[in-house]
Image 1 (cartoon, helix red, strand yellow):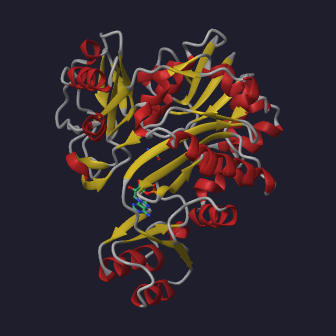
Image 2: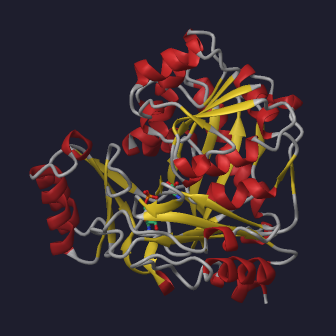
Image 3: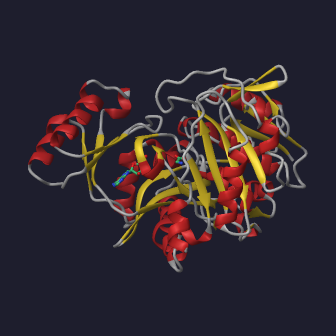
Length: 427
Ligand code: AMP
Ligand code: GLY
């Protein structure tokens, strides 16, 4: 198989790394890819947002399978275009990608199909949203979400009415997310631990992937601003006994059935971001692609051929898939640039990469680096994802932090408590 991976972050490096282990895979190209994922991948200088150029690349390069990392090209219809051109693609078409592309679509879809989620209202006027809050229809804190894609920044948890009003004004009046904020979801704040549940589906059959937990805030103990994800771990115990099946039955399968029944079957990676509340799991968001950094912790645990599985998905034959999960947990610690998620410098030399990646159960995924002669330098906010597996979660955590401590660049910072909630709970 000749595989094309779209994207160039840590998630895509993990995809290329994992696909390269499959016996069917002869070559991997990444568009635009990154220096750090070569090898195993080769790079094509095509932007992940340029749908026309990606379709040309996939057709001219005679790729047997296209795996799409980021959501934007999916929402823009890349998978429809590839399928029309006869290229096998693991990713949903634009109509199905609305599960991530429009929070209003996702909420209304869940309401239509009885999928558990936070109570909500949709508003297209800041004034009506304000009146609803003033009338006490929601308690504080309340959650305000821009409808469209906002690069992970479209969710505000407002502590009181004035914070809510500020968020509504930002989104709907000052239009800081452009058209993505013209309509908003106002929803009830949920309490509990979060879990990321991903499943592969061809629109009918479902192959669940092992659960993961992301760490979105920049500082330890979930403090500071939100980021793209400061680390993740995957351990089957993230979901207490019985809960994995309950989530499949209450969330994943009804979503797959509902999308098919509404005429746009979902083919790809269905990601449910869940809050595990006292009253049961509730969907916080759907994503229509592999999570990042979750993928960096989940893929090292998969046994069997991911390439073959994704190809079966594209063909609508996922019932033939054989993919197993290794019981060993995995932990991914993100090493970030000083200042991230705010302003940060680029071009800082990275030391210790080779040493960090030496251990057989450690892999260092590149999220934002660039090769400069013989060395790598920083080129993004999230720079590296140091991932380790271990016989148990303690071993995996220790190994990941040991490896992380080998790496150094000016301004580097990372959370010291990745997987700590799990470690405490399982003890
Ligand atoms: P989203 O992009 O919808 O996942 O939101 C980003 C983050 O905001 C989530 O990972 C949660 O930490 C938080 N969040 C979103 N919706 C809610 C909610 N209804 N209650 C509490 N936290 C939420
Ligand atoms: N880790 C959350 C996401 O991929 O959107």
